Image 1 (cartoon, rainbow, N blue to C red):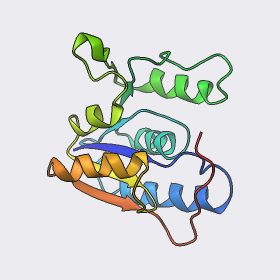
Image 2 (image 1 turned 60 degrees about the vertical axis):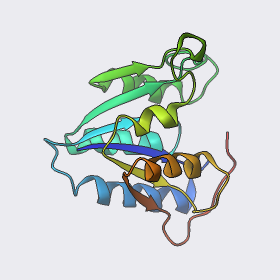
Image 3 (image 1 turned 180 degrees about the horizontal axis):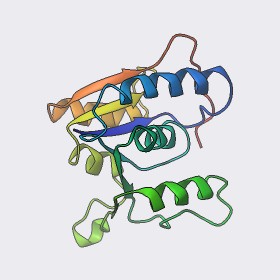
Image 4 (image 1 turned 90 degrees about the vertical axis):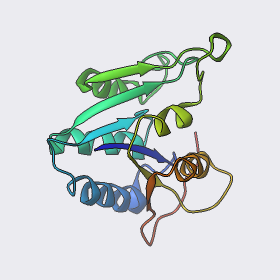
Length: 159
């Protein structure tokens, strides 16, 4: 089963991180480790937490990198070390082709939806965010979307 992740950024620290990590783990372990392939951009927060859960459960990880981004992030990116470790543990890293060359460019959401069987959306349910857009793409593609937003969660500052 190929499972992708999208989620609000800025959730690190405090009760929200603890609640979301717990729900991600609870969901990840419902899949057999031999069949699970997690697909993620390994951004800070839910995407990296999901990736780590998949690997700790014994599943495989694939990473999507937008065309316009440095592969492991900028040198001043505080999440760079985590991203690099996850990419090194991944079975595959998919760098998107530039839009002016016929690729998806930086549209990692569209790429993600095209690569998965189910989506996990760590999302408060409100419209207008990237998780809302990706969940909409997944629904339109006929994919099942697991929305995670435990009681007590609060959105932080998006980066």
